[in-house]
Image (cartoon, rainbow over all chains, first blue to last red; front, side, top):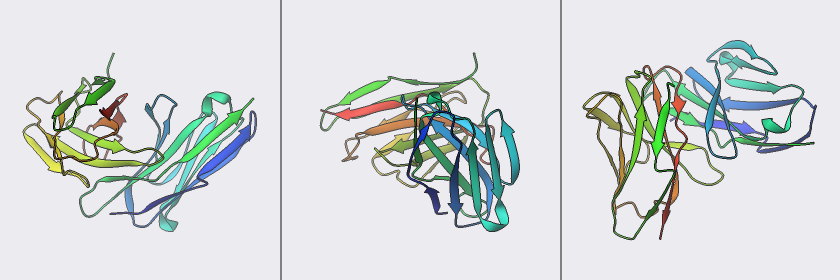
Length: 110
Length: 112
């Protein structure tokens, strides 16, 4: 299956700071999603973004499909942004399963 | 409210016992999925179903079984053949296989 690599693995920010999370994938994709997993384990959809740029409040995401990477931007971070951010990718060929990276653990301190 | 529910929230399994995890959705989605998450890891696909009465193995199906008798329901059985079942289990659904997947709150399974 497709390989999905996320960086950095861990990130600690002061409240109000900005950050960029990166997701690299090894094949062409027809589905690329970003999720936030809160401390209770719930996975929340952030973006469905196989290509292009989307924004939702303080969060935005960009996928450059031709170069096989996606970026998640968090601006003016808040303590409620803490948790693990996962990128997941699905290819056009093969079994079409959604493959997850190992995540970026974000801790925002007051 | 539309969404995905999973029960129970916590489940304890004794050695040699089969246990069943429940997943229900009222989103009218055709596709449903079961994932397993181990500490510090991403999610791995156990089984998926694209339509009622049809399901396919994912990447780690050994020791698990599923059924899809109703569109709304996709229960997962962890059998005694699964030697390392302790994990967090997440159910998801989507309109079809290429669309956004939405996740339930998860079930934590522990072996006694």
